[in-house]
Image (tube, rainbow, N blue to C red; front, side, top):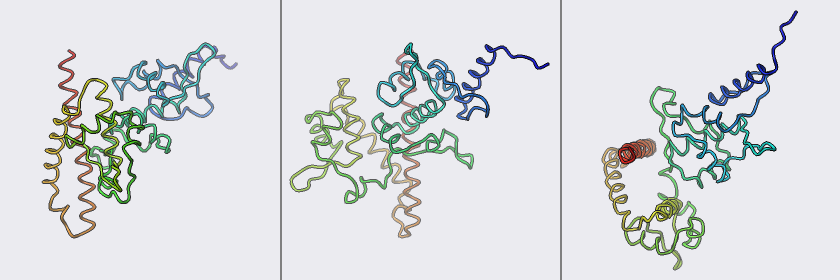
Length: 270
């Protein structure tokens, strides 16, 4: 006579399988219904990789239209494995590439998936995989082939004030390019303005950004010295490899700077 498994045990087993699948990014075993999980279970599934994850942060990402979990008639959020995978991708882009939410939204809309965002330590040769947030071969190095934005477009998209952009130009943070009497900015400068506009909400003014500019100039000089011979090579393949190495070094330096900043800020909040 077959043993009858209580229905409560079946439900608990489904919950455990769904939670395990969400935490590992795998699919539930065949024959087992892929059960949605609550927001608390999502936190539990992701906390090992993202120690700072919280219910309020997940809700904020939903408010920003980055997540759309299903709602029960009582208003409770239920997340599928696809929702959890999308959330993991968002958190990795924030942590590993320091992308603002607006750019993350664009990446997701363009079809970016979790497979394209390797977790730290994911290189096949055992070395850590660093992914630069901005390519050095983007419009900043070839304006003729890249998208340019007028001041009006930049102000509309970034919600920055014209006075702030003028300050950034005055202190050399952005420069733009005059064409037909109109100043245009490339994608990198547009993102710089967007980041500064966010800082401005907290009272940071253009003159306060000279420390960032000076730091960036020193870092750029250091990285240039490391790869200068290869960057000046007449061999196209060697120059290409040098640019790729420069991108990698830039990503490592950015991550190191982020870690040092977090370490110092933690001393303040203790």
